[in-house]
Length: 332
Ligand code: TXA
Ligand code: MG
Image (tube, rainbow, N blue to C red; front, side, top):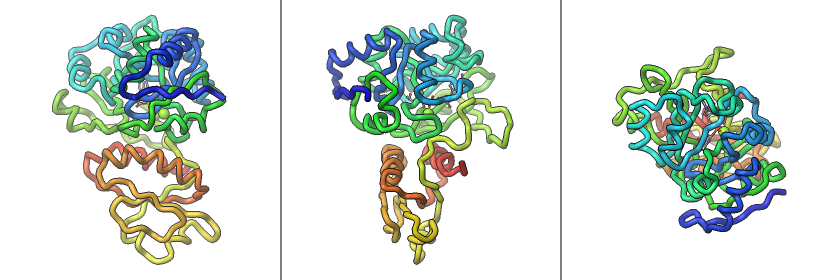
């Protein structure tokens, strides 16, 4: 099992950060908190280290990683061309839950970008992440610290459960604040294009960058503009079903999953339905996102085969949460 070391999420202690940075420099793997989810970190400039990330996650090599930086200069060094648009977005939202896809510099390992001509870059808004990147003095490649297609981790315990035997050190900075992965924006075309919605909303981005092209709808085997856009992703073990508050209130919902199957529910405004386990999340997108993955982890741990999820509002503020639930519910 990997070692789990507690570190203050506000003023990270020097010693665990130094140890983690030395591991990164030695090409090893360190899981660390960001404001969105925990990342599985490795030296982004070391092809072997990046290879270990893919191996630990069981992630296919066609799906590129995000390089995390602690300052704008480091972001520029990863890019072949750093546009005025990238500059504007970075100054408005970094550090923060926004990933920018930009043309890649030639010196990056091909594995990091999965052979694409672009690279994804982000400056996370978390003191532990920033301290680690600064101390390591290299950009840190970090996907979410979960096995491929499984739930993203929002606590160090989630990381340990999923990847504990496959990484060298886990920095435990407590539960993450945002709760779902960053918004991913492609800046390689003439106009910014949303690749993955997140808690930084399109409205906020458009206020700074002008019109943003919508996330493409992916059908069947069509080529994916973002290789990570496999339909079933962020997935719990249980089968998720989105239901209306009226359906939840209907009698006999406890048998929805079939005779003898254990059913759970996630509600935010409906009254508690008659199921084995109910988790209530805040009826507001920020709080809902913060609690979502932990709720799904808990319902999995409780052995729920079916999870009923109360319908979410169709407003833009909920877009990131709706996207994750839609993927988690997609038939595997
Ligand atoms: O919040 C987050 O973004 C977390 C934390 C750890 O920073 N990281 C994360 O990484 O969610 P990951 O690897 O699970 O998701 C990265 C997404 C994937 O969908 C990937 O396909 C996409 O970004 N991506 C990476 N590089 C890309 C590129 N060059 N072009 C298009 N999409 C890219
Ligand atoms: Mg992920």
